Length: 302
Image (tube, rainbow, N blue to C red; front, side, top):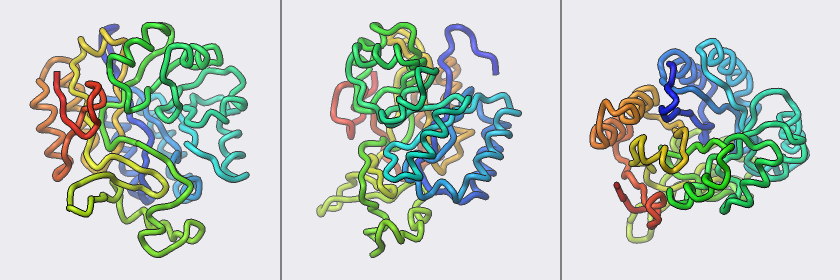
């Protein structure tokens, strides 16, 4: 779908969760054929152990997506922890594909060629983003805890860098060397049996009082609720945002992307967007506090 110069683009971010190869193939086939997104991120970013399980399906998905007119971006690991993962990251960064860097250690292997700066890089001011821009950064997905005002200020100091706002999904909050899924199931990280596959949207955590708190996905800590950006296109453009990132979850992501497209194009309002999201992701609370400069677990609409 062609976008006008004023349109806010849509990107499907990298999948955080451990889905089987068959599910991946079906999912990305539908995205290729039906979803109104322009860019799709592929590649394992959470746990390098999971990469071999789905590599064939992911390569086939890339070909299918490109035939469907999507731009494919290959996302690198958040935290390569051994020689194999560092070698895998180096090979990805030295290739000719569009890549997203999620670990500062990968910068040396990109060698000043263009890249996307992922939301796991600690970029908190104009100078830090300017440094990345001098090294080849063309698009930046800000840290999820930044407010829209802070993002706007950083973007204003770096007008040549496109800004892609994390707009939908469980918020990626932290990354650990310990696998919570393995521990919860009485296993070790090295012999985890890939039990994270049992929770295709991550596993929720409650406080001792039964209050929803966080979620875990292997070595990753996420928000319990779904983050949803409530800002319409005019406010996003004014803040320097040119695209929104939707994080894959088990709800119908084609329907969710279509609902976002209608909202951004002014054909539907925020209430219709939220209703569509609740219909596809029942049982999830919705939050947006970080973008308003408030606690992330709160809902705050303009």
